[in-house]
Length: 228
Length: 228
DNA sequence: TTTCATTATATGGTATGCCAGAAACCACCG
DNA sequence: CGGTGGTTTCTGGCATACCATATAATGAAA
Image 1 (cartoon, each protein chain N blue to C red):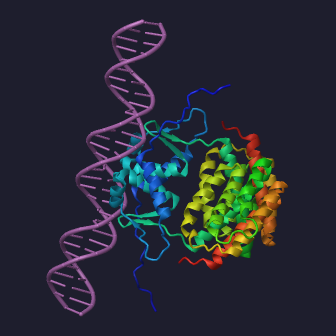
Image 2 (image 1 turned 90 degrees about the horizontal axis):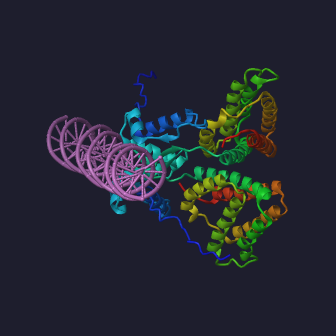
Image 3 (image 1 turned 135 degrees about the horizontal axis):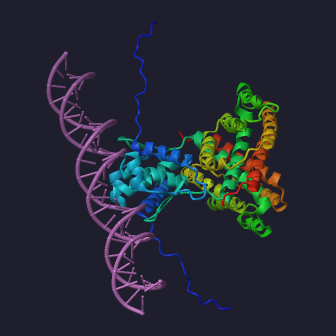
C-alpha cells in the first residue's frame, strides 16, 4: 500500500517565552565554566531580560523553575546566584546514579529484547583493544551514551528523567574529571562484563557490576577531583 | 565567666509570597482527593490569587515551580491542571524508591552508628506480635517513618530529597492502598530482618532485603490498586 | 431544528511600574 | 586617619494592565 497521506507533523509549537528562556538559561549555565576561580556566579535579572529580549516576568518564572531544580539560588534583594555544587554533593549524585543505573540494569535483563541489548556492543567495541590513544574525548562521549543506553533499556522513564537532571549538574565538572587512559581501558572491560551479564539475563550480576562500576567513578572523583 | 550577652535569635525570616504560596499550593494539592472520579483538577489563576490574597505574579512563579516538580501541568491559554499520575508512573516511582532506599541501606551499614541503628527498633517493636488489630492506620505512619529513618541513616541528603519528592506524588493514592492486616504483619517481619542485617553490618543483605521489600509493595500495587 | 460562522468571554502570557530592602558610597565627626 | 551614620543606588518582589488565543455563547442561514 502506497503511503500517500499528508505527513502531519506537530504544528510549530512556538513555546512560551518562559519555557524558551528556561531552556536558554539552562544551556547558558551549563556551558559556563562555573568552577573556574573568579567565575561570575551572579545573574542580573534586568541585564538578562535585555539580553534575551524578554521582560522580567517570564524570565523570573524561568528562574523560579531553575531554582526548584537546584541550579540557581535566589537571594531576596541580594541577587541570583548560580549554584556551585560542593564535592560532597557531587559524590551524592554519583551515589544516586549508581543506585538508579544498577536498578536499570536489573530491569533491562527483564524487559529488554536481545536485539536491544546487542546494540550496546556498538558503543563499546569501537574502542576495542588499545585504539584509544588520542580518543579519550570520543570515548568519554561513548561512555556516556553507553550508560544512557542501559537506562533506556530499562524502560523506566523516571530513572531516565532523574538521571538526566543529575547529569545537568555534573556536566559542569566533567572538564575536571581526568579520564586518563588507564581508567578508560579498565572502564571498557567493565562495560563488556556488563553487556555479558545483560545478555545472559543475569539480573543480580548486571546490577552488581553496574553499581560497582559507578562506585569506582565515585571513588575516583573523591580521590582525585578537587573542587572547593 | 558569666554569660550576660543578648540572646540573639535569628530574625523571623518572613519568606517571600512566592515560596509561601508554593508551600500552600503544594499542601492544598496534597490534601485534595485528586483520584476521586469527578475531582476538580483545574486551577484558576485569578481565583487562586484571590483566595491566597496575593497577586498573580508570585502565584505564577509558584506554579512554575510546581510544574517543574511535575505536580501541575500548565496548558497555555487552556488552564492549569493538577497532574494525575498514571498507574505506570506510580509503579516507576516505587521502583526508583526501591533503588534509592536499598542503596541507602547499604550506605547505612557503612556510616551509621550502632546507636542510630538500634533506634529503628522503636519504630517496629511497638507493633510487635499481633497487636495491630485496629491500628493499621498507625502502623502505616510508623511504616513510613521506618523507611524514612533508613534513608536518614545513610547520610545521603540527595536520596532523602528525591525520595521526599516521590512521596509527595504517591501521597495522593495512599488512601487507595489497602494495607490489609496480613500485609502489615509480613511487613513487620521484613523490617525486623532489615534491622538485623543493618546491625550485623551486612550491606549486601540489607540492600537486597530493602529492595525486595519495596518491590513487594510494587507488585502489590500493580496487582490490587486500580487508578485509571 | 441543526449547523456553522461570528462574536463575546475567559484564561494564561507578557510587559511595565512601583516598592522595599540590601549594599555601596560618602560625608561628617571623633 | 578611622569609624559611624545617613543617603543613594542597585536589585529582586509584587501588583496591575494589557495582550493573544482558546473556548463558549449566540444568532443567522439552510
